[in-house]
Length: 109
Length: 116
Image 1 (tube, one colour):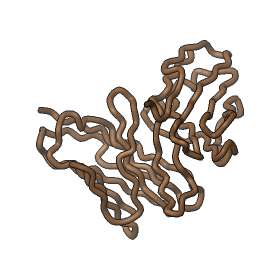
Image 2 (tube, each protein chain N blue to C red; image 1 turned 180 degrees about the vertical axis):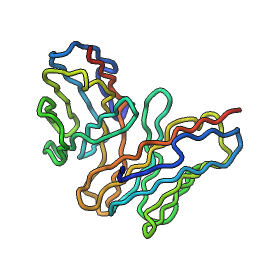
Image 3 (tube, each protein chain N blue to C red; image 1 turned 135 degrees about the vertical axis):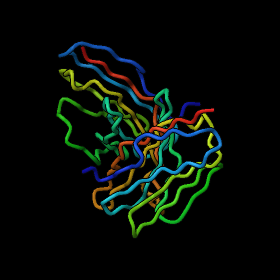
């Protein structure tokens, strides 16, 4: 079993829908990252957090350290949000980044 | 104003050859990384360098040798290429060592390596 699990693996939405992507992890962490990989392959860091909640535009990321769970929310989704969203945690013990397998999101107009 | 650049973007080569991928960052970061993304799109860290010193070395065949001539560059040299080395390789950098422990990663565009 992967130390970082994401759900769902694939997600299809209509433009305007509210989207939630989940990430659960089993190791102690010092930080959690949400990354976006565009269809062209480029990777962008969206959020890095270790507690609470962060918001950037239509994107919101939350983390619950006790439950070892994070969620990425997209409000008023748009076709340009179509991408693979990757959760990654920095292991507290080894300092390495461990990646989830990603969630492929497609938003249709 | 590319923050993290990699060359080449595409690399097609035959088994047994030796090849290098170059990475440069102009962000003034102390730490650079190499990641491998396999055909299933799973990202995995290979190496991490901080101020030209090796910090993380995952279980990677010793055919892979990173070289950091200065803290702005981290090149990846691969000897005796094998079919299984075909993947997309991403370079990244971050500003480590801050008291907040915030290590935001900045990724390069990736190098798609195809070994035939």
